[in-house]
Image (cartoon, rainbow, N blue to C red; front, top):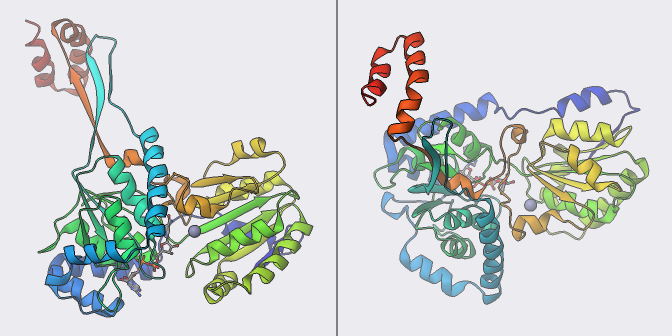
Length: 428
Ligand SMILES: NC(=O)c1ccc[n+]([C@@H]2O[C@H](COP(=O)([O-])OP(=O)(O)OC[C@H]3O[C@@H](n4cnc5c(N)ncnc54)[C@H](O)[C@@H]3O)[C@@H](O)[C@H]2O)c1
Ligand SMILES: [Zn+2]
């Protein structure tokens, strides 16, 4: 874990690198563009080729979809304790979703016309659930669960299968508990392309949701237009901001939990207390020994991890806002003062007891959150993103007449006399 203090040489340069923009590298961009082109041109055959190449599985075009038998098997195989956990998480998700959904409204404008908005669920959405490094059962709930709450009638799930051609049974169970209507056993950029463009066997969707690795995220970015997307939720990250009241063992535990996602994960720790930083580094070493994914964690600690000693908390907040972390843990004495100042984080966990993992699995807000700096311009996944918004305008005799003078003025200055006429004809 790289440790650097405001007193060190190179501090300014390092802090500048924390001011992020979510822009993919050329190599990822080109690799994904080719995958998208191939799926567009060769459909199911391209999906089978990529499954063989990346997931080491032989997937005949006829075997792309999870079967009814596989779902029934999963239902039998999953332990009652797992079913209970899935239900508990879904219950919180559903309640949270209800409160953030948009409701229809209307009012009469200054001319007396009735104007308003109507919200209806998308007809058919795609939900990507990563399956590369871990079966992210919770991610199935934290995406599809919101689709269900928003009453989307058709949800197509996509997740890579193992070399045996099977999807993890707990993951399948969760997808079905969250109301997914069909599932393709395809992962990566090719899955996103199939859902956006359609293939011989996959009917395209209207909007694509869900997190993934850098290839998945880039595919979503490239396919905007064919579909819309939720956000850019890539490799997971946490930034802890703490003063001397932070609990070093809890902070270490949160950082390790995040590092456990492996690969491109990013973990950061900012504090104005040098003593706390030293304690956290020691606690990390101590706790790491007992964890099963120590190899993944070490990789992350060696690559994307940093501990930053700042002059004061204001400086820390400024850096955190530039960094726009997916998760921000705030462990400070004056909680509400500093909480107000953090603007770009996808989710904020307040206080020593608010473990990020509770939000990962259970709390209610979706754990699908913007990463890589995308938090500046995107928010986390929400139920209202599954709603299509339509505006509605209704005029009567009085309001059409009252609207005429302003319409005629715009029609005159824009040189669009047919526009003016289309309103005056109704006032004769
Ligand atoms: N931001 C969030 O809200 C959030 C939530 C959950 C998970 N995540 C992140 O999702 C990510 C999941 O990543 P993952 O890799 O485990 O699973 P994944 O399902 O996203 O990716 C696996 C797929 O990547 C493709 N792939 C692998 N190597 C490739 C290559 N060289 N070229 C092209 N395609 C390739 C393969 O098709 C494979 O099926 C993690 O980084 C995790 O942190 C983020
Ligand atoms: Zn996590």
